[in-house]
Image (cartoon, rainbow, N blue to C red; front, side):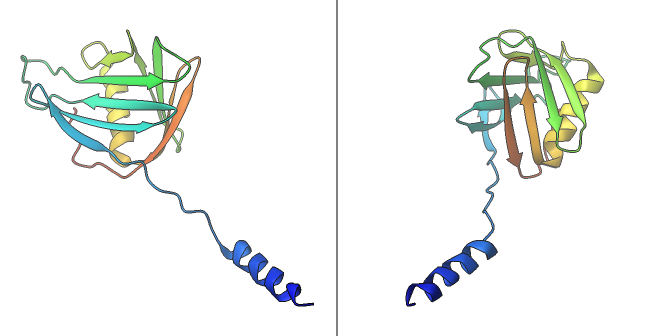
Length: 141
């Protein structure tokens, strides 16, 4: 009889508890004069190199670099927002460059990252999901 209140109390606590979902944190650095944002999990990583000031010439030199656990050399990256919006970027050696990407696809990818929330990076062999805060100041157009 003494165990019954303890068990009921524990069950009530468990039933009312909700999991705590932490956001994946963006890390901001500067490399070779360019702003770099990155987010990483054990399953994979994303780095976005921006060139808002056209540091190395008249055209933007933005790039996206990814790392996956199961796909060492993806040829296509799909950035898929939880809302269903997606951007497709051709890749070479784990990188997609702004110069080689379709302008509309690059802009969709930037919009997904700016909005924050849950998004996935998907290749033909692997995927990784992130949940990040919004980044309205992301200047990678």
